[in-house]
Length: 89
Image 1 (cartoon, rainbow, N blue to C red):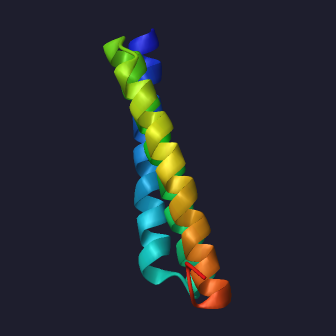
Image 2: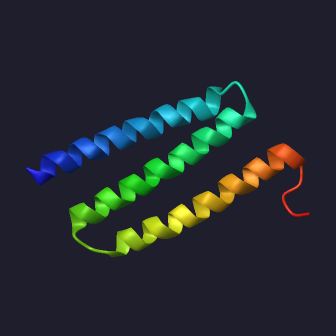
């Protein structure tokens, strides 16, 4: 039963990634594109966690944590670039 739940989760998050990719390409503004990238990071983290559950190892959970930290830093950098034009003052 857990196998079906994992496949359903993979399908849902993969669909979410595709829809975010569409929003990234066709977003009306820069803020929408940054939000789409941030949401893609969250979906990628969810896929890593689901894959870790499917494989039964903790390595993918650590990779998801690192991916989350890098995703947060890139989102902050993009937002600072939008607001100020510079990332580092």
